[in-house]
Image (tube, rainbow, N blue to C red; front, side):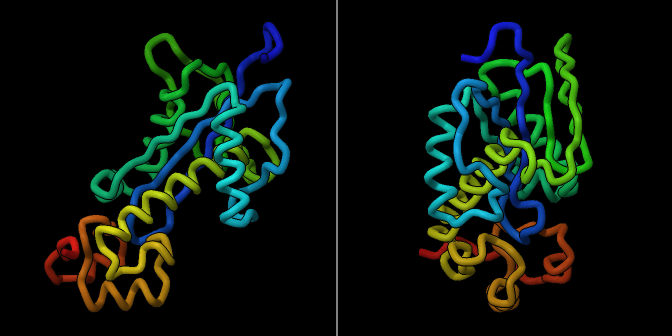
Length: 204
């Protein structure tokens, strides 16, 4: 259990700000002081297998965790920064308990206030590398988003989402040129704003 009287601290991170397709996913994690999780690190520095292993451990051993996202429509309507902040806010509000302090990777903070709930919050550059709870959040967000992209790949295998996870690889851009965008593509991103072809429908 967490020490009596200890302020609950949540770490928050996101995955998927840069891709041309798919949601931006955020996670919030409150770790137990008496149950440290070994091997936590920035998700980008871990293998896919290690992330999957840690995902299950974090979900099992953390005091609380939550995963949320903003979808493609919200990204196009709000812009990617505001959609990211929205996903982070949703993740924190999805926690089973309310943290007193919220630490967010990066240099921008969402507004986490709801009614009388007004937690302290701070942005930490490289927090996913230096703060265990943020590292845990980065792993949950990355694994969750990758799983979503695998599901999208089953609907639209022609784009290769399972391989590039929606990022703007040469393969992905070539597929967009060939097939046009699908409903999971971010139309507000510059490579897709230039596309004038109809939206691709799911493969039969």
